[in-house]
Length: 130
Image (cartoon, rainbow, N blue to C red; front, side, top):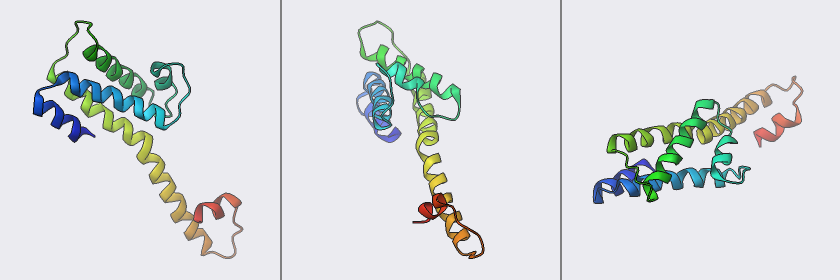
């Protein structure tokens, strides 16, 4: 994701384009997670992230994207866009990779537990092993 935004920004010098991509990425995440809310600001509040500060960072990235793509007169620098490009992958990792790692660990631990015939298995562990 970062590479494609970087390429767009470098290829045409389009900070507006990069900002738009950042904003659209946040929208895609909110839609993918089917978050509740009447607008994306509310949906960001409902993100299942482990750190509250991530929600505030995403709101600011969305704000930056909104301002750069609308005729508000606010212009951000390349450095400000770059900071947003650094923040977004961290939050995405928290949202998606953590679940994948937990799921992988659950499956591994379920397999380990299944090798011990003396231990009674809960239905959740049996299901995770499958």
